[in-house]
Image 1 (cartoon, rainbow, N blue to C red):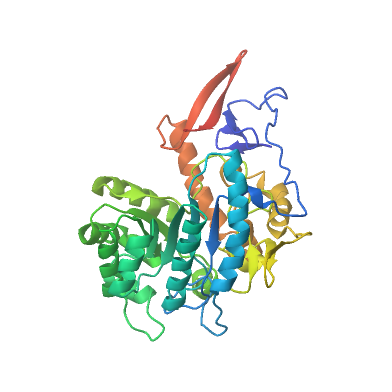
Image 2 (cartoon, rainbow, N blue to C red):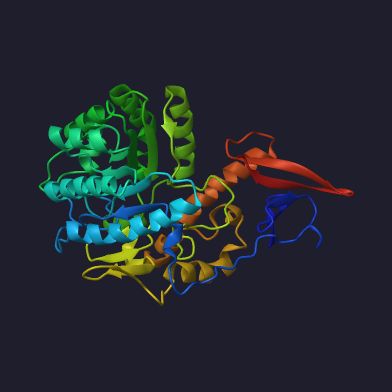
Length: 424
């Protein structure tokens, strides 16, 4: 679709700008939006697996998207993990014949704190290590944790995990306000100690900071504190609080300034100054064919839940595609999947294709669209992404460079177009 972007025309499906309205020949529409729906999941594309060991948490973060309160505790068992791994290892051996073998990534994450029931968590990790050794399948472990750990627990993660993401919100004051324990105690000192200990390990350490709009103004002090406390040998992720779960009511009624794109751009410059590597998990940084890797047809990481259900996405288990389940002795892949994520995106496409951010977000996260309850919430992330994408476009059209996207001039007869392309 061709739309106006300031004084230019933008073809959102062919990803190019032009001064004049594109001709039919230029509008070839190489991208055909068609999410082919499949009735059954094909597990032979699996590259990694996810385990949600616990839906309980020892924190009560004031922005928790799942509003975890431990009212319905559930935990994975070693028996469930064994059944799941029997199926995954069988698939992995078949794949290894056709492609170059590589380690199977096993990631622990979910609505709760995965180390909440430490003995169960440790038992599962050790069981996977023993089983993988028996089957001669190399394993790489990853985890997202709140970092509220004892020294022996830190040492266990250090010795066995390859990727460790610790949620930590910057200065002690902000951390202790946002991320209290379930009994209301501050957490900054213990989590900071955990991070410093983990930084001595072989694991790749990611610090994930989540920020309320009233703290946007503190972004410089947050980054300065992280650098002075932890150095620069970590990867930093910055996320805004989103209007879901505990944050929904207070954020949707927030009337102050909320330009996260501006805050994020400033954060990137500050991180370059301090030599801190960043990982952008909120804004799209490339031209995309699909907005989500959890669609049934493309899912490469199935997640096992304590209920025994296998889903395609851990970020929104309620609205994730249900790939299969465990019975007493095996994995059953569902014969008829209701592709809720694909349907969500397909329904939104007609409206989204006329948006200038469409080349990047391709309708955005389908799960978030399903779970957001009111109109203010539905369009909240869209506005943030539009602010971010408009900065990219304005810089490129002004001749400035971008780390991820370039504008390539292409001459066609007497006319020219300016093609958006990913920098590989």
